Image (cartoon, rainbow, N blue to C red):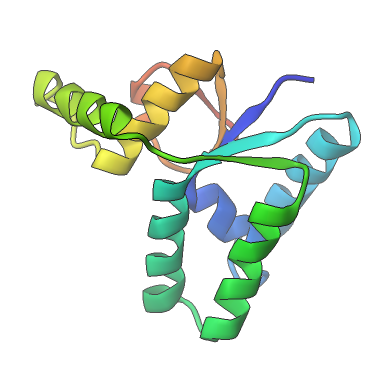
Length: 138
């Protein structure tokens, strides 16, 4: 089973049961993991996730840290740590695509997906469609 990229919005829906769409993401993830699939994400996505949890949800800091720890500890997730080179290449992608309103985290995610040969993303973010990837949550 191929890997799927886990973006911030997908992880938010996966981890926060109060979010609309939570059960759908749980079902997608459960099916993927039970068929031997894994998820790839980045430390930038996790940074963005913590910021969203802190500002938009009612989860405590302990709950947020527990969720991020679980992602780091499960064998179903690989967290790619962004190197200075990847960081710079993502910024260059933003420079050459002024027609898109992608974030730096998006650009890093797209490059990681390309580097890993990934085509699917667990995300609600339409920017993944713009970049030519298959968004699993529409």
